[in-house]
Image (cartoon, rainbow, N blue to C red; front, side, top):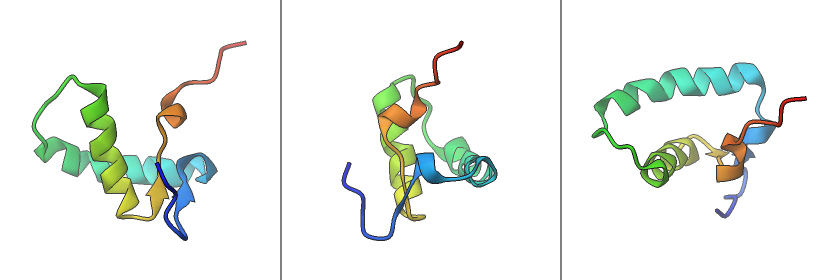
Length: 67
């Protein structure tokens, strides 16, 4: 995904910013047709975040390895 000028990377957001966005996105998610397809879920969330100046990459969804 290309990072539009001025957009912020998901990884660069604070935990508070990410949480706020996830809470806001839930209202949109509740209106979307249900799907189990991760590619569709990711594309929807990326589009929603892009409209808010945030870029989310698939790699951002991977949890760090437990130590």
